[in-house]
Length: 104
Image (cartoon, rainbow, N blue to C red; front, side, top):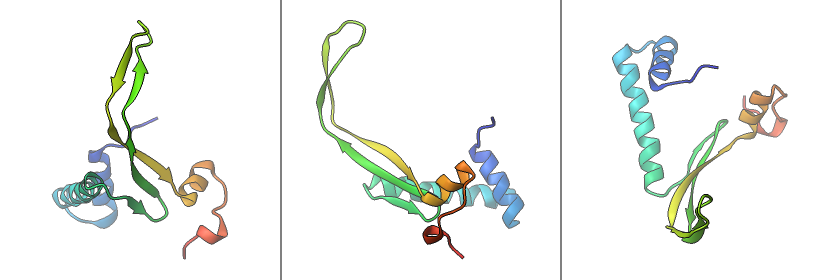
C-alpha cells in the first residue's frame, strides 16, 4: 500500500490539469491552506462527493494513566473528525453509488 503525499498530489495535478509543476504545487498549497484556515476558524469544510471535516469540542475530563492507575486531568480541546460522503463510501466498497447522491 502506498501513501499519497503532497508531492504525489501536486504531480497528479500537473499530469491532469497541465499546469507547470511549480504552479501545481502552489495550487495544492493554496487549497490545503484554505481548508486548514477554515477549520482553524472553527468552521466545517464540506467537499461534495468526498466528505465533511468537522471540529468537535471536547470538555475537560479525568483520565487514568493505564500503567500506574493515577488520575490525571485531560484538558479541553478541539478534535478534527472526518465523515465520508455516501459517494466516497460506495467507491471504497465497490458498490453502486446511491441514486439520490449520484451527480451528473
